[in-house]
Image 1 (cartoon, rainbow, N blue to C red):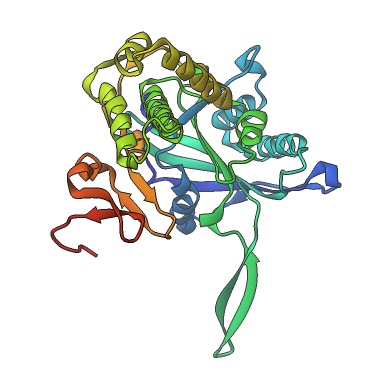
Image 2 (cartoon, one colour):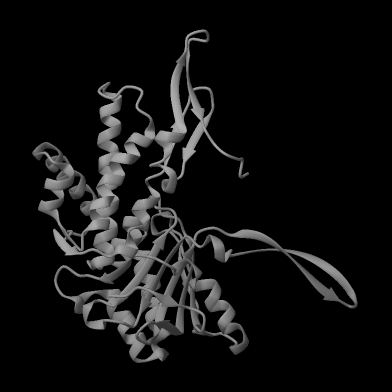
Length: 360
């Protein structure tokens, strides 16, 4: 299921706006009285601003424990796609749902924007979408205007598109499976509220998602195991790139195989029942956080291993305030270019770095 979309030709045609307060603090919900039509000249610019955060996100879909037909947001979205004139009444229902779910004391009030988007392109087709954005902070900005031949400076407050806190882009694809939903939450601390309580979505259990999750889990788990071994004294003074080497070995399994098999991974990479049991606990925690069970076998998506590769870099933090960073691409060569020792005169350890030239 492809999640590569192009927003270059997308247009935002209509908006429903709301101010979503906190019900436990007696803050009201206020919604616009009609859908706001966007001027034709502004439609491409507004689309570029609103859709920018949705590049390269993990795809989700609406999910309901009983039946998809009972999912409120799924029903609202379906009505809008069937009849764009329903944007205002269904947009107000979406705002009411968010207000009703905003009971946790840590949830902030904010401005809500529900937009009708046209012309999002994928490899297969051009689709429409419903975009939901929530901004929880207002920022000051300056504007200069012409008044009777003179210039004046005005101070105003508004939404910074680069700082929008939460968002969901619901694309009109796979309606019978819960649509194709891209979502983000910059705060992170209450992402369960946004993803599960309000949106009611779960990740799409496809090859890119599973490749990302298992590779990321494998690298994180192996590094954690190696670091615990070093802290216990079994590998005293081992440099951090030794840990990265162990993580690279785990990642090499994904790079060398066409299909992932959990039992085979445990045998070839983890190599012991004890580590396999620990990895099962680690996997269960991640599944719980995402609200999604992971299939034990799948086709490996090679292009989706980049996230795990980024975690292979090494950092040596020294008590003298010096940090040595080794980029993932050079981690394997670190052993030949970095030397450690002990200076008897100073009574301190040292690190010697060999290089040809300074690239700064």
